[in-house]
Length: 171
Image (cartoon, rainbow, N blue to C red):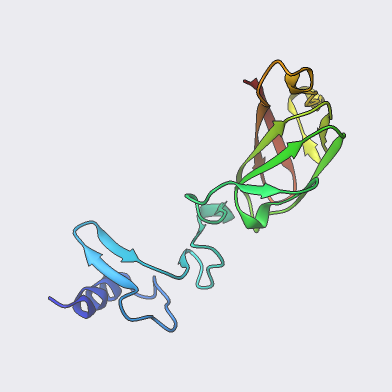
């Protein structure tokens, strides 16, 4: 059976579930596991995917971007969540206030803070357990005794607020 037969059968089983424009020859393959898209963006629950995988689920829940994407490194304190759900900032010898540009919709997010000097990082615009925002203090690198310290901060974004939870001091 040719690929066009598989795709036609797929469309017949799930009418209007997939929208495709300007298909590139060889961009879609069928194997024993299902469809494999070699390039372009794929949307589930949306006909205009902006990422490699763009998923909108029930009640507007959104999975941002390509889940297998590498961590996006940021210079400065503004994290643009529309570029991916895994982001990293580095805090050196100066203090840094981290702020956010929102993702496209409600989702889970991960921020990695790499502390390499004596600077202190603070995060603005997030809600924290007990109402107390953590302070990401200087690493021991300044004293020359340790490698950089890593903090991992998870956020749930509900479309309006960021709810944060920090796991700190990975060495």
